[in-house]
Image (cartoon, rainbow, N blue to C red; front, side, top):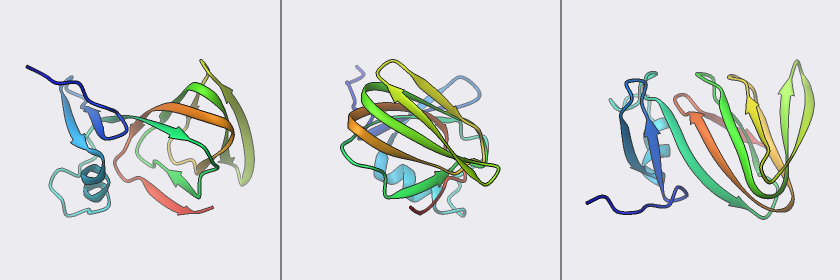
Length: 130
């Protein structure tokens, strides 16, 4: 029997063939950071995760292999996308979403404690300091 999981602790990875896997959150990011890991492939699929935020992000991230959908499930936050060398702000409140185009640096500012669901093509994810 399948047990319930939390998307902030175990990620669901939906692969292009319609199957899914559960990954421990810490293990997933170690694997993504290691190009030699045989599980780290461009056809890995979409990562589904959920986070709560009480402060602005301390870094920017970029997903060079695919778009990312970010759905704000509660609170208020602003996604900042770096497009054509300029910052574009996208305010989000509960029930709204933004699609971050692949290969776009982005970060978030939190105006009010917020929760968000992420559907991310995780392969090749990069981070840099804000």
